Length: 407
Image (cartoon, rainbow, N blue to C red; front, side):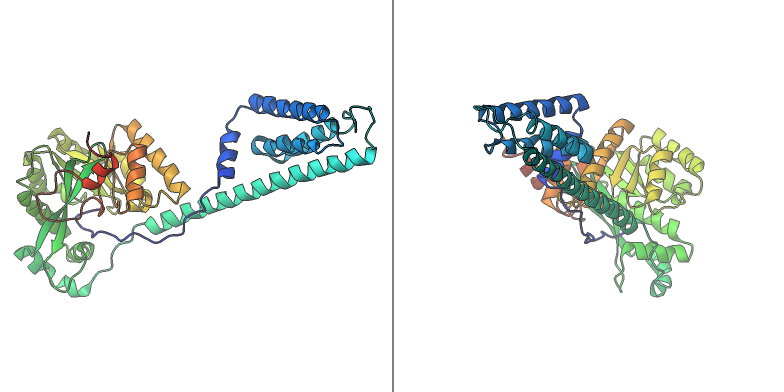
């Protein structure tokens, strides 16, 4: 979330069907080494043959045991594995199995052929059903990926003509004020930072992104950004030294020596966020500007990561210290296999990059619990703290409750 944007509501979306236990078993079985799967199937076939023989032959109901290895063969090997196992089972329970082991009476050819056909049919139907289920699951994941990036792709706010004439007065009279949203550590629930956001004291009410767009229309966006950051720094002067402050600045604003001077003179931990919505014309120039800030002890964050493809390039080019995951990927982990898979990949990527992961937009306890279990560093969202005036609560009761009662 940025100082130039309001908190976005969670987007309603249809999630992919959660895989059943059969699907989960199929995926785990697929990871078993081939030699081990073949050994298990051979053991099951041999065991089934011994069981049928010891119970008197094919005249008993025991030949149904062969359905077990036939069905299990579909998990690692699919249709070919199922039909091959069915043929082997038909031979074992046909020519190699008497009708009655006591008398040694043989089965009729038609009897074991019919049973063999049934074995093959069951194997084919089972493997086909699993293949169709897997195909449906893949299609749902594909559709979820498409919806996620389509919904998350940033769009510039429309210029509100009613605000354009008010921009000069708003900037000159400072008719806005900062609020601060807390960021809490998932390891213990303590406050690690606050993010400065801007609220405008003007009617008609408009979200901050619309005001900044109106300022851009009259050529004063960077001036408004600088004024908003200056107000935030003034209001955050009482922050404890161990609590960081995060502000949002566009690449154009960071070219202003006055803003750079304000940022580098801040005495405590300070992070500058670059958002997905910021178009970066020259990464080399911005990298040099950020290097000067980093030399002064500031951190760099890429905000709204995952909201669109631009944030991926921001991460690669800027090598941020902090990656803030957009709510479009942060929410709905309990019902979306895609988001859980992406969550694990993002955490692993952030770990290898030597950065920290802040998960934004946390509004549901189940999402908070999953991110905590998976190893995210910290979270931000309405569930743990809404934007407001300082001081922010030093700990999050919600996160602390995940740890259970204090001992």
